[in-house]
Image (cartoon, rainbow, N blue to C red; front, side):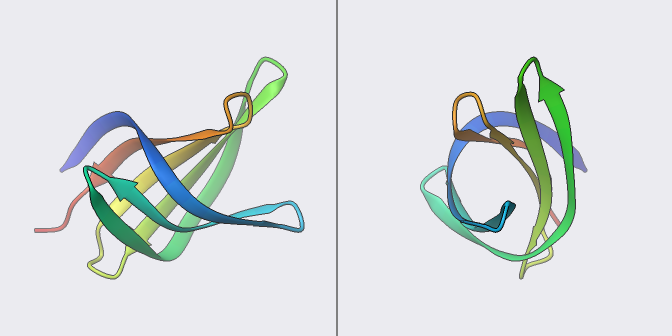
Length: 83
């Protein structure tokens, strides 16, 4: 079941060649290693961009992360935990 979260998270990210590549994130004092990025899209927030990334962990849990170029911060938007 998809759950809306909307909480700030810390994301270890590689920024290279104009690409955003999240590697792992910390939520509720737990580290989640990202196995793969399954989707990327953008929305505009005035002159700034919101970068949406859907990611999956090795446990096959789905998370949607948002990178806000105005605040340069990350938000865990929602999740769909297996099991």
